[in-house]
Image 1 (tube, helix red, strand yellow):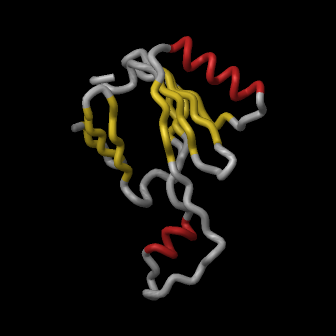
Image 2: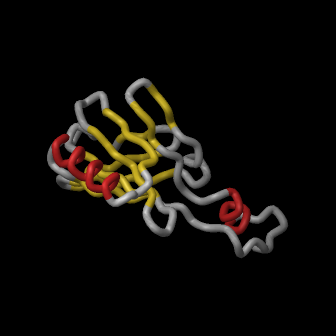
Length: 125
């Protein structure tokens, strides 16, 4: 298991299970290697899920989830990035990982964060 201040990553065979700390992933992480877009529930959803008054009251809030599709190499990430751009999908960020992997983040039709990631992202992948 790897653990950060906002994420815990568990190796499950040849895949990864990521668990994110509720309310800790809403801001982008920008570094010299790229951008990981913020994701997770909006402030309205957090207030709805954990109301200070004890009663949920904001029905306009939305839940912004993060999902990832693993591919085997950088060329596949690049091909997906090109395809997504060609069909006018909003690209939210690109990150080149220090282990040699690459991730492209995009917004799906419901506003969720999708990721295409190659090997070289995690120690076991």
